[in-house]
Image 1 (tube, rainbow, N blue to C red):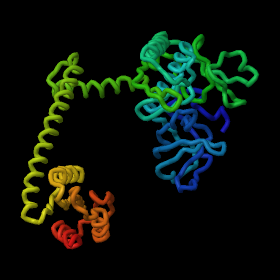
Image 2 (cartoon, rainbow, N blue to C red):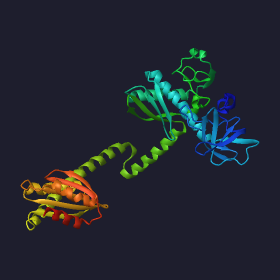
Image 3 (cartoon, helix red, strand yellow):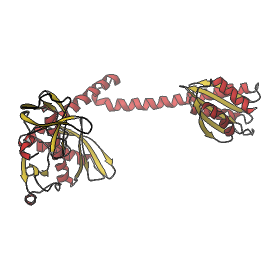
Image 4 (cartoon, helix red, strand yellow):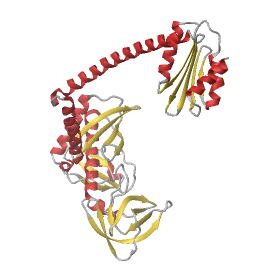
Length: 399
């Protein structure tokens, strides 16, 4: 499609437009699309997502440029394709993309001018944007300076110019990065600040971007990925975070200024309680081990028990406490956990039975897997045998 037919390049503010249907077809996936003789719908490209809207009251859910034509994908095909049809662009979505895309230009130019950090990646998501900066480190001070400069450019409400130039004319402009295309080159210019080749849609002035707020950054391989928002998304982020903050002030019973201290206290108290709880668990396990060991005196130095919903780690610790206390004892535990059987078999140092071999005999009968050594082994499998029957099976194999 010729540039003259791409109305979004003539005027990014067009909401509605008339057009004729050139053709209506299905793609390889069976999705219906129409091609128009002119369009204000922006197709996916240059990091900017596609426009949505409607054509003759049919919802447009995707727009792509393929094989030299712009395809407008419709939820249902048009029954009548003759005559003039009205295209209507979802303006809220379009203007949001204009704010975000222009804001990205401004922020990238700020990092470039201040620190020579080039932008080598850009993604415009549904809620936030990211740019990848060609640096391995980024300080909070640098982030603050770049954000301040970007918002200063916005506040100055500078005019944004768009020019179509030839490859030969590019030398007249101090481009922030080299252009990929070699003909029909479109420059988006913020005078005395940023000169950049771009095929996306942008507002007429920097003031329409409203604001830029950097949210976070992290290292990605040898680059820094920076997350931010522009325009109305700044307000949305503030609303979301303010709602969370207000809820936290109620839950923590602390004013906003004391929130950090309240959270730190809560975390420290939680850690202290965890230590107390862990000590209590250890004492209970030791008490339980002594009780189970007392039973073994009446059963030829064998501790065999069935449990419900005990973790394998807990059973292992309990078995080790028992065998450490009495080197003549054998320990066999079976636990049922959410439709699974778990086994722990252990022997005291003075015994010679092979626990690994014993577990290896039992696991095939419950379709299980496990491992260990001659003195301590464990495994798990399907609970199609009752835990009591499995324990009896272990004792029978032992004999």
